[in-house]
Amino acid sequence: MLERAAAELDTATWRRVLSEAAALGVLQVHFSGGEPLARRDLAELVGHAAEAGLYGNLITSGIGLDAARMAALAAAGIEHVQLSLQDADPAMGDRVAGLAGAQAQKQRAARLVREAGFPLTVNAVVHRQNLERLGDIVELALTLGADRLEIAHVQYYGWALRNRAALLPSRGQLDAATALVEAARARLKGVLAIDYVVPDYYARRPKACMGGWGRRFLNVTPAGKVLPCHAAETLPGLRFPSVSAASLAQIWYEDPAFAQFRDTHWMAEPCRSCERREIDWGGCRCQAFALTGDAARTDPACALAPDHALLELARDQAVETNSDFAYRRFTISGAPAAEPGA
Ligand code: SF4
Ligand code: FES
Image (cartoon, protein in one colour):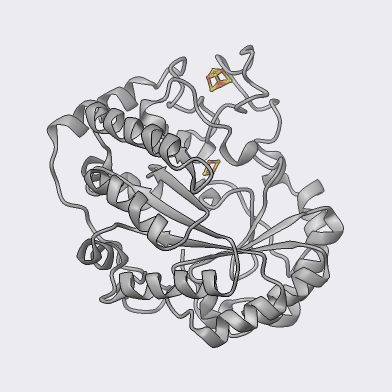
């Protein structure tokens, strides 16, 4: 859910939260969004995080990054920048970003990051509508001077799930993409590192989402709600705490929502007696809920899951369907719908 800017935490509260994170033992902070560059105090927060000993990573669309802001972020101590890229084709990039000129702004942002001497990771989300240009995406990342390219297939939660028939690749498309990535990795060894995340829908075992619920990761929303994962608010029946009411340490160690799916006590069969239960932690709770209506069920991405047939059905539909995708119209409570941003 989007929040009004007026509902966002103020600078002083963010500084306290960053200090609490460092005291809790957090090592890295990812300034993400929405779009973190929309915060005028971003450089101040980056500076505070750096002083607290946190490794600062900026995850951005690149929209709004100019030379002055890059210089301010560099002076504040940002360590690394991740830039999102929707396509190699400028028209498609603008279309998916929902903003004319977005692709050009991203390229300008990449140049600023590299000129400032910072490592750059390009994040490219791929799906059936841009997979045919995966080779061009690799070339574009090289042209932009990226050190690392993260190619991640869409994960089907929230809005992506609504668009699944338009986005999920067929097995043939996925195999071709995987072969292309393997060839590029070999060709670009030492030049461009490539991470590759395949869709759960073609896996036989799920990923350990977030490294396990409430085990390695916490997400503080712009309004200060603390979540175990970015999609946790889709789960009914869980109330997530706010940094306004408790410290990060209290939340991490004592909050019932963080304990709900931590470790293995909540698991039913087949996870409960499975030898992988402390490896993948039963997969993704949000995916389990989205597909089965029960967040405590085994992630259907697992071939051992009673609901695995749901994914097989979606895979079959991916071969048969050729629908366009539907855009989200953001709504903020009490306000009319707004167009998407980059
Ligand atoms: Fe993981 Fe559960 Fe599948 Fe075992 S049954 S591999 S623990 S999701
Ligand atoms: Fe919420 Fe995976 S996204 S547990």
